[in-house]
Length: 254
Image 1 (cartoon, rainbow, N blue to C red):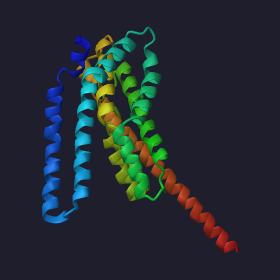
Image 2 (image 1 turned 30 degrees about the vertical axis):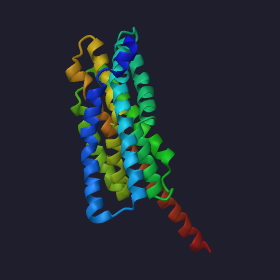
Image 3 (image 1 turned 45 degrees about the vertical axis):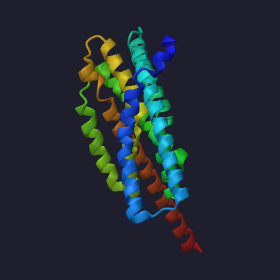
Image 4 (image 1 turned 90 degrees about the horizontal axis):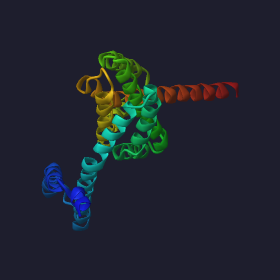
């Protein structure tokens, strides 16, 4: 009985917070539909049903985050920090970052939209791998930073300078997608599990301050997918330029 109570403890607060978050969106939709959209009743019913499903899904998800995801990250981070070989945090951080980003709902939605808007020119799986690899590198870098005591500025400033430089050599659509990917990568799964993991590791590591060394991983997660997506865009542009040169060469030979 206590276990069942624990599962639903605090769920009323979560339900109210989600209600307040979704309500403005619903009201704006209803207002725009009344003055401009004029959608048919079946479509409105389907959309409102989608809002209800979204509400229930968010409540259950956030409740699960509060009672399981965050504690699991804290327990795992503490256990890893107490291992004899602290370097194991680096490859484990890479693996955890990749798997969590691969399962991030916001990332899944983003890559599918990219594939649809580009008519399949940019495959969803390729973009998903680029984002997941970026998050994996970000978490790995966060573990290296935590163990070595490196200031966050020494990573963020050069990283964004590199991003702006790469932005000069990619197509505008890739530049826009890159910064959007950085945003979606910091979704609820990454922000809750990996952040709690990082803070717990910093708290259990001698000589490290959880406030100074534990936080900052979300900033790295936002940066790394930007870079990997820009590198992907640079590769695509070079590939397209090579294909164009080959076509011109074949046409001139003929």
